[in-house]
Image (cartoon, rainbow, N blue to C red; front, side, top):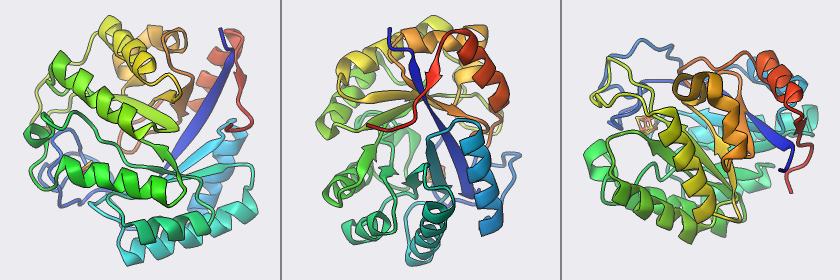
Length: 280
Ligand code: SF4
């Protein structure tokens, strides 16, 4: 077994008030979820979080904004942030996650020092209209093609446990396989009373099977477990590393709390894991 795990931290640069209606997302303005909302995080705060991520052995640092797409204002801010972080925390690999984006904007991100673009397909093309009516799965797919064309490493995955069928899961993974992402994040749906989706959380065995199936479908991709790790897998969460995953998100997620990073680090060390110090 490979005993190296890659850690990635998420920085929520803007949160909530999104006009889209993705049924699994508490940042959608269509639901009244109890989350912290803000337009733009201060650069000083982002830098503080980046330094903390590095101190927690994270190699990846993902700048996430809510909303459908990467408009000019967001693009300027993410580029400015990326340039600052490159100077201040050069060991971090920067990932941007800012919604649908044009080839030209993605090229700007690349120029500013962003390493990878994250835009999830979320689920199968067939199931997507059941969970979102304000934009299409094809728009998401196209952004992924744009990111690759712009020379960014692709980070593309999705979320399980939304009521999708096994056939949807197979179809979703086959689309991911076409895109050949560098990293594929796997999220497990966390039930929330404010959301329309009323599916119970997945069982641990089902979640581990999803990881194994994803790793088999994407043999050249790093599988990263993101949201839902603690809630869905509980005490068995580190079994993900024997079931296809080789990367995890540490610290808080966008709108839900994660494990305290130091707890993860200690638990991983106890199990004999080292932390990746380079991406390739
Ligand atoms: S997933 Fe993204 S686009 Fe969809 S509601 Fe949430 S923030 Fe908006």
